[in-house]
Image (cartoon, rainbow, N blue to C red; front, top):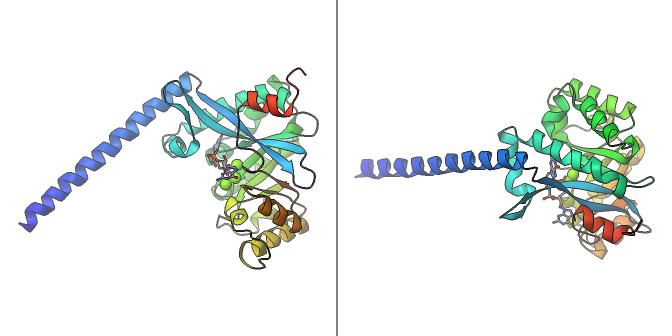
Length: 278
Ligand code: C2E
Ligand code: MG
Ligand code: MG
Ligand code: MG
């Protein structure tokens, strides 16, 4: 009897595996079609100066604009895209759009950041390809910044270091995303040509008034570390006025979050931040 139940369980497991594999295959096909139809577009989340609220830039975040299913968020498709090797192609589709949008959206000293998937930085021609794309759209290097994660720095660090170094030489600065959540050693902050750190949302969420320990201790430590290394700091995921206030007290200068705005389409950015006529 036990044997029979075991066999049954295996059959069930088999069936579930089979279904999961089918879903993956289906998703892979969906992503490929979506690439051809150019359904991957950037939305933009403003990054503000926390003292006076002026706009310092935007983060470009990928959205999948499906004709029937509507807007899908990265959490729903980026894992599969990365596994199947589609993410780099999707990234280029988004970067192309961003470069087309930048002349309208990013003026003066403002910048727009691009999220860079780990594999990109090890491609021998990533920097050249990006600079070519930018010059094709007459985008100034100072108006573009890259966001890389600690994980992206771990594999083949010499290649990554050289790539980011060439980009900095050309005027494109790099920020370390989700800082504090990875497990790389702090020596990475010196080794790679970084311009700034983005403090992960998990630390911002934990900020409370009058609290001396926990998240505020971590944010303070990150700021001190960044100051001594000459790095800028940007706080992610600010949702409340209290969090903005605490971050200001801790000396943070820049931040983004739902308190100010969710990521929105280029058209919404234009309507909100710039005179539509100009
Ligand atoms: P990330 O780069 O750390 O982006 C920040 C995420 O936090 C975004 O989620 C953003 O919408 C969300 N967020 C911003 N403010 C708040 C807030 O106040 N509260 C909360 N709860 N969330 C907030 P999103 O757009 O879903 O992107 C998730 C992740 O997907 C990104 O994390 C990034 O790792 C990846 N990603 C997004 N766009 C791209 C892209 O174009 N290329 C690549 N390779 N990865 C991307
Ligand atoms: Mg990011
Ligand atoms: Mg981030
Ligand atoms: Mg994050």
